[in-house]
Image (cartoon, rainbow, N blue to C red; front, side):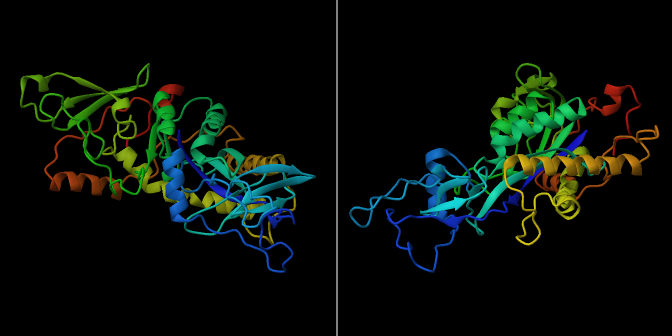
Length: 389
């Protein structure tokens, strides 16, 4: 009932080769030295975000320039793709490239080299560390775009929606939060700057404070969250912590659409949310495990298998997930009818919660109490609920 999702690069066995012809406007044609894929410059990234609202790690769509020599064909915009025999020919870094992997694409970054291949997205069970669902997608599709199919696949595997889902800043988009809140799932996702002019940390608004605690509609003081509902329009009920005016004594409600990334079913001051935040980094090892044990999602040229194509990558990743769960079932003796352990969060103390509560105490910010938690796995299955950490 606690899931972690992340995507990692999967390099294709077919490297991208320079493929500009004599009719193309390319100064490297016929030379022994070939142009390399260059990094995604900060200027191009900023211009692309302004025009399309995309993130830095997305291929550019620059405007084609006129040829430097008359009679030559200009290089099309970045990302232009066409079929070329058994593979594809596409434009990256201002030149035509050829790849024998028809489904692979090239991704460009601002802080490191480009790479040609796929994204390997995993949803991991935070109790066993095993992969619940895995989806391989081309690199020209952003993580937030492919999240819907990955989440639906994981929900179909476990049979119901989880309590919380942890992810990094790559999933800090409105569509991801809206999908999870409408399913009564708490997104444990770090704050992400929308642009270079955005503040380094989340700021206080008229509806919530900087930790996402709803404010009283009468005295504007932070309250104590009571419950959350995802039916229709997701919303949060809370009570005022100060009760200084007559309007503070009644229970109040705030819709989540006023602060999509701030109002959550489990607030950030809750020990459960804090424990999930602290344990997120430890699940990065799942990428290393799949590479080491199943040769899935490889990045090294010398170790990756020689298969090409999206279907082959997906088959290998799914087979590795299946074998991984067989090991889990045998180690926990679940194949022999063993008892399912209590579904509790691993950590009982949290440095994240300590930082949040200390900051609120130093700034004399009231409120932020933990709500009554009823959405437990035990409530759904009839088993006794676990002890709250």
